[in-house]
Image 1 (cartoon, each protein chain N blue to C red):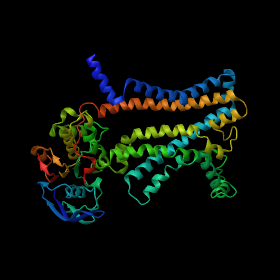
Image 2 (cartoon, helix red, strand yellow):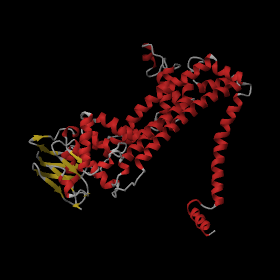
Image 3 (cartoon, rainbow over the protein chains, first blue to last red):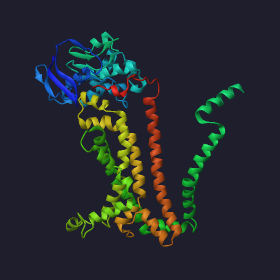
Length: 184
Length: 304
């Protein structure tokens, strides 16, 4: 699974967030985008995930141009800066969300959710609500939620200071683009 | 004594002295008693002044029962309309960017700004069958708007339009669109995102808006009075019926009908309290137990 960004430009009004950006993320690699705040890291990831349309340029995944593919069909896992936890759902329902949307069988969903929560060390929090988790726990829940639908291993994380341990970052799987100003 | 002194000085900072607190409380509660509780109690007492028989007869007369049912019809038709369109309008106003948004935003408050009587007269101008804008055309197709329940529904919808929008807009702004975007990246389409993410997040705003528009639809007088023609047993709602009884010197009957109307309103408020209490309990479990760590980042630094 590779991601190629070809001369992408994105403006917000007068502000040029991305100016002719090229990026290649090879299959099985872990890439970190580093830069001061406001330099367009998140915007680039949002373009890759399909949350923003670039003004010019293309996004190619596995050799296919996906620039015009809507976000819900692109299948790129995405961890939001503030985790964007679904506050009215338990950890289980948060992680299961994408699988329920895809109408997977119940037993399979439950099994997958448990696997993912084990992976991010949240197995004891399955019936909690996001409001009952710490910031780091919420981030790991968001990661598990993104990975649930991420069969091909493409994830974007826009954490400013990713509290992901190198180990959990690696567990993102191959082709993971992480946007961070620093790893702690 | 020392401990007492410390406690008092702490209260001083927050609430002022004991005397100041008592004065505040007296003013607040006195105001409510004088303007809200006493008039409502008077209505209840007055209703049974001429005996329960007259009160019962006024309410159960054919005109009275018709007014009661017509009032319920007004609520059952106009509240869902306002709820659906209110939620749609709120989403458009908060989530979409378009030219003239500020204008639409202020237009929504129009029904609050202008008197219901003016609304009624405006509907008269638009729908009267002789020279209204749409009246003659509708009359040709056999649809009568004025002096019929259709026009009364228009009037009711108009005056109770802003409630749902105004309750939902701040909630939508507050929750932001992070969760909706997350749902999209997880494969949800717009419709699924709305039902599974947006609606559960705004449900308190919607509930409160529904209650307020229900109360308004129940009690609307001015606009409905103008467009209905106040025909007994045909286009008379409870508020109109109350006023008709009062004008025809059936004072205790008027109060009896007023009690019925007040009970409908109280039932609405009571229902909301029940829903709210149940829901808030659950919400508290969701948001406030355990620790609620701050994200440490201001909302301005969203992903972008």
